[in-house]
Length: 478
Image 1: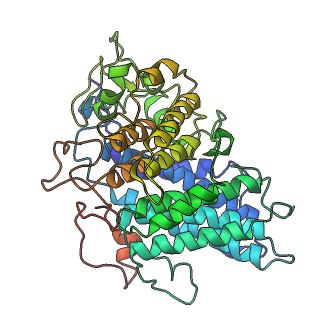
Image 2: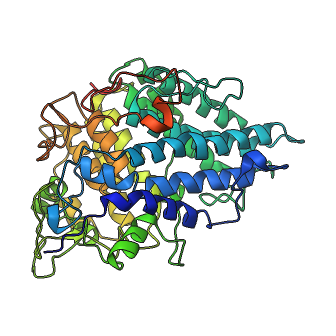
Image 3: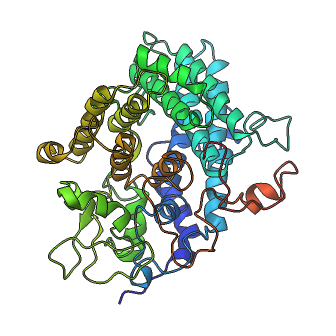
């Protein structure tokens, strides 16, 4: 038995991860005290801190385990307990990251770019797009959050905007960013743009795709979003090939590795003894011998085949682990948006007839292309697998087939998996059908995080003072 429970050291781990990741490039660590603040430095620190949280102990691990796309292995691995008991350090550090660190840097960068002589519109647009993505994450974790009054020096206690209003504001922000982009201008963030190196064509496509994703999250609750979805599908200009994938890169250089790997490096000597193959993913891959299985997982030490485990069940030496050589390798990128993600969203729109005529044949083409791109991303040949899949035109539930492939593709993106599960159908018909983990309070699944007490509830007099149960659905969640 390998009984190693490191939940109580994650605060220290998160601080180590952020300080290490901050060395990715030369960055401004104290923008509020600098005499001259340039947008590129603010941008770089903002995105670096954001990615460190997305892939580190405060965010990645709680979402991976509570969303059930990875398994803890019980006391054999990460530790057996209530996977819905999210540490206040995790909630507090994630909230501070969104507002005090990354959000503050992006807002200051926008101001710096728009007050410069000449105005650096491209730099402002780059920061607005990242700010929109970050706050989209924030509101889909907590629901109502500060936005319209956030980062305003004259307002000490920002109000909490309703989630629908936050979504609407983010769409407007993306429209503004897209309109600001000047492809011909040399004024932009280039060297410090670790994602696209100042390629504004790619930034414009990302802005359109992020808008599309937000609208697809809204549309079930607000059907009027279908009109804008149709406009985007007609106009195009979204992420349209893998070279437009939005990836934050990490390296094998010490101090610049992916934070997921650094947790294993620091607490397990670089081995993965904490995170295991969850049957909630594996059981959808096994029937057709999905070629991603050996990419996602490694066989247990004494096993001759891949053996998954349920969310909180005890693993053993036979249980497959998440693959340290692929998903948890030191230079694994932080995946923010991909071409296959775009294709699956488009396939869903046509399969459901969201803003466009229902067209299962077109949906099938997009769906199969999405699977092909997902296979390509992991370097495997999906030809045989694709040949075994039925067409969406003959599927009993075409939309569920799309959601199944989205779920499989999101194994290493637990935040996006959490969002996708909630938006995949009304309560009780989400995909996949999950079982409430052992040890969690009766009453339902986790659908939101608690607001952090020390980071926001106590210091902000306008913050909600009544505790909201973690089973409470957010506005978009039917």
